[in-house]
Length: 340
Picture 1 (cartoon, rainbow, N blue to C red):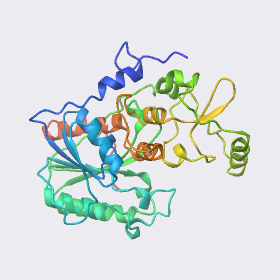
Picture 2: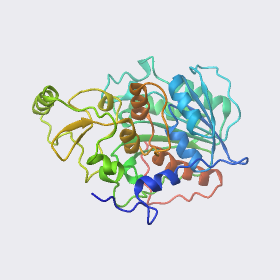
Picture 3: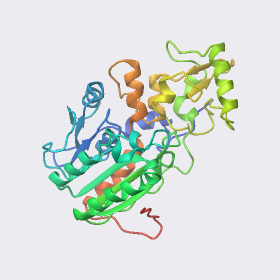
Picture 4: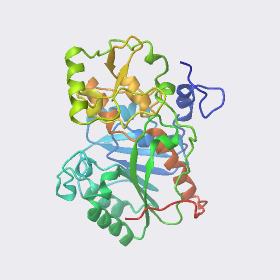
């Protein structure tokens, strides 16, 4: 199966991706603090848009991956209220999403993993010109009241706050992944317009892996097949969980990458055998370039990938951040604002 040309005429999507996301900060680049940085998916998008990043991440393998691949530094630290930070023009980050995920208990502020108090304390201390928070869309449901309190705090600090759900597939990411973005700015903000009128598909991203498996593939056996069939019957699954090469992938999560569950992301080979995704395949579905290397044990690498912000989605937001800081954004009636 031949992959179609990427957004950059004449290149396959994987080749274009490797060039598009090269970090390019300069000495005069705006400074970005990246809190709860993970392995640097959001930061990679910002560095590709010309920002200088400084990450903060408590997982050592994730922070090491950040340092290995990005131009910016990353501190291995568990953030707490009262943390001191350097000056920055922008504060970004994805506070842990488990307290608000529809797949969890949605305990919100009552969940000890809630990172919003730390994030808001950092914004109060740094007083950046722009604040960008990424989280699961589950915040719009049972946690909607808490989301409103976060927005109110930002507004009390003097920020104009807007929220919107963005889908990664609209920005050349080969995956349907909806995430809530909360933006607080001093000035004007415009949301990024979709850049991918024709979705990038699993076939575009995985290319030859769909016919030739990667090194040491993890094959499903008859026991796994029986378990999956039982899972799909019990859950009344309308669409089998095998990846459809002609479409973007389902949402990539930690659970459906490294666990032999009925919901796992899996590839069906031409001979009918099925297998789990490799680290590189999972990374491509999240729009990490092939030059981006992950550190640590395989399960840790898959966990980083599942938790990451797709770098291409991060870049789309970062491009708007550059315009905002330059005072060049123009509000338009064509942009739908979602304010809970």
